[in-house]
Length: 507
Image 1 (cartoon, helix red, strand yellow):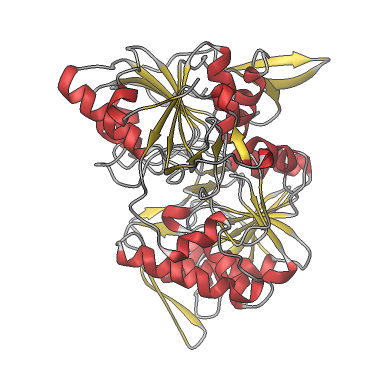
Image 2 (cartoon, helix red, strand yellow):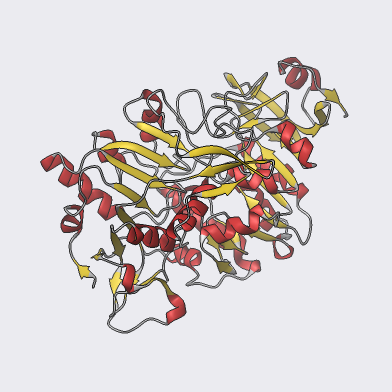
């Protein structure tokens, strides 16, 4: 039988040393009030402490002073196992300092491991991650010198074939954000943008005898339709009711409350951009527009597409602007299919989605080669065509769904600037001008850490492009090839002289 209680009362149920399963997707679906209550309790009592936080898609609110970042920074957490740290500005820097154990696993295997372990299996076995940083023979999932847990990812061999086995620690507590609790205690998600791993986390926690705590917006006095229920009452221990502060009409397009036809997508995309611009969460980036517009030329009618976070978000913008969107099916790894992926803090949501599934089911489709093309960002690329998308010089953002998506998709398009930290590019009368180079090059001899393996992509027969603000490269068996230089760009000065290695010239 579930109990309705305050956030403070719910936080008091979390013991020291608890392993907490968090259902969130980057900056969305975050049970913020529960995190606030944990922070308040820790500041007042020093408990709960030595927590382990586990989240397949990452958690955070893009603000170091909100959500879990407060109690992480103040010392309540001893270990984080996470697919993506991008929405946690302070935490993704702290993970490299050795203040606590920090691990990064690909999002898809984490989601699948939760589902498998909820069903009593000893983890999840997959080829995803072979040859990447998470492979124990390469680096392993630990992000700092104090992270030595070798049980999370192990190399196994089955009938002469290599695989990785992913296994997560059992959950003592689940923290989940839903929309409504009905008269019986069932949880529905009608105002949420995605369900992510909610059911698997609740089942995995219950299997371990732990407590499932759900933050909701409202209490319903009637009963929900059975097919609308995401977490059945039998799995729910505690419900915390917190009325939402923001209910802007534009965000109703992300939950499906407002139906959005293809002809209206661009209007609602601009509405969301305006909302985020008012909050200071979006900055104008002309390089990103150049890249997004060129990358969008790789779209083919009838394609099923995945759009990554950051610069790749511009691809969907230009797909809508050019009128090709109705003939494409866009998707995001959080579970949305159809519609237009939202950007910025709402990344993971879809404007006018046709359907929203659990995240593990979306990765079933991706891992099976269901995507025709994907558009991904990159921190670095090297002479082998390998890409680092998860680890910068002074922070670790995490690989997220990148590993699954790029390993199984036939056509992979990376979207990245040639350099960063000060790059200033303009476009006038169709001519691209490099007004100022960035201080840090993004095309290097060897990437710092491998998120995507160029040699493995060649063996898999994938087509790979690297679209920048000044040119386009393609991956060949012999190495990287320069295949396009934009009007206004000096090929020798702006490209070849700035590369640390020779490339094939096919221009």
